[in-house]
Length: 269
Image (cartoon, rainbow, N blue to C red):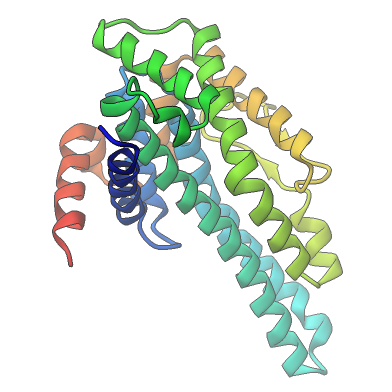
């Protein structure tokens, strides 16, 4: 297969991933796609499972953030135009975060599907970064053999994918979003999120002193993995129910639910 054909194949999966990832507010849809990749990999690719928690947790976080911003905006009550401008800036920042989640979902789906078919072909390393390619090839090999990787190996895969997304999607867009949020008080609050995914135990949190710090995001990503591994992957997946966002059909048969969702979305023009 020529390199141009490989790139066309990756582009096909990327376009499919973008459609499946949905719009900015389709968080439940993205969680379904993320979970599909985790499940289809034989539970070996755990990055998307943790990302599914991130997508569903963010739904409540964005709602709380907008309520808080509306309350804080009364400091500008004597200047209605400025008040609306500041609220619009907060919504724009929230949309930057939503778009990051959307792009990561599309990338996760595309890289997984592409490597499942073409990961061992010469030239694949020109399309997928070699550390991520090696990790995903390990996932597919284990899945084909009917084996589940040990947690140390799962972490190697998780880290390769997490660092790739930090470099290519998360970091650049976070920097842009923060730069455009010119409301000092809200910016201060936005940079210090307190994250608690549904699978965390009592007293377990991801705390940031500066969300724009790549080092902090990486450290908390590792902590999110460690807490999931400690909880157990089956229980971590089951904890998605606690957000009360995904439909009952998902929990009855997640594979059938994803297949139906995919068929419906890809059938649309």
